[in-house]
Image (cartoon, rainbow, N blue to C red; front, top):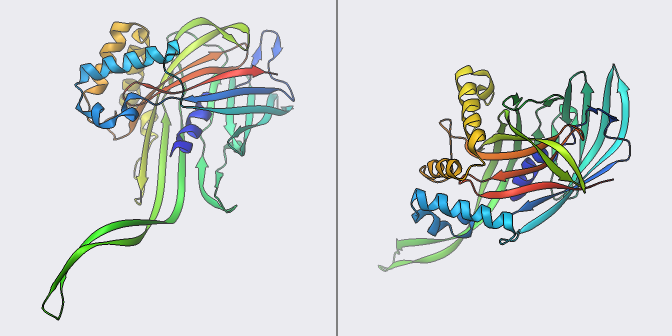
Length: 342
């Protein structure tokens, strides 16, 4: 599950979204973009039993202090994973500039295709085709289905960038478990026997996971430093909605979040409301306390888990250069950043 989370976050966070900048094409053949994914142990993960007993206001205060301590370096990361992206080729196809390359996560290289056509950059993984999930024995244990991302070249504060959907399917497999079970029976000898015994059981598992990335709200325009150089960046805010079905047929239609106008407008309005005050301590405390009032992890009316995401997009570089992923309580769980561009 941890690898799935890192994978889902990586392809949202590390986006080599090429475009034509004022001085020409940003990306070139052979260029390597070194990034890293950094993980943290949130208050919920630190002590779930203690967390559940807290009042909403105390949870909000704990989360705000945790995020502050992470930002100041007081809380150290629990993991760091390198994510290199290499541009292997640049070509012109039907009037569009096409960049092909790979992003390595763990030991697997995932193919990237970026099409810079007109005023939009189209970002495809595996050319939009299902991507096999490798197993331990060189077999295929499932598939990823990736949505196409569209990034306009010109951004305006207060506007929205399109969202997209990813889906993961793990094929049926046998999960063997061992547990101690109590038994009690009467024998033919007139005695009763009882006790505990270790029992091995096998159950068939099949997992379907849906990841809905809502539209990005353009929060602000600011200066940011990337690999030792300063750039103008646009801060984006969106949500990742996720749900996993185990041993059941997925009945959800995730496109409802985009196609249903009422729901889509509601999501956008919520993002805009957060975006306008997310950097204000008072507003952030209000938002976090509201999140804590729900039981367990934050879920929406459709039963999808809700996670807040921030990202910084640099038009001059044509890519998302930094991003932050918050768990359902609002605590920073993962962040990414570009380490170098060569």
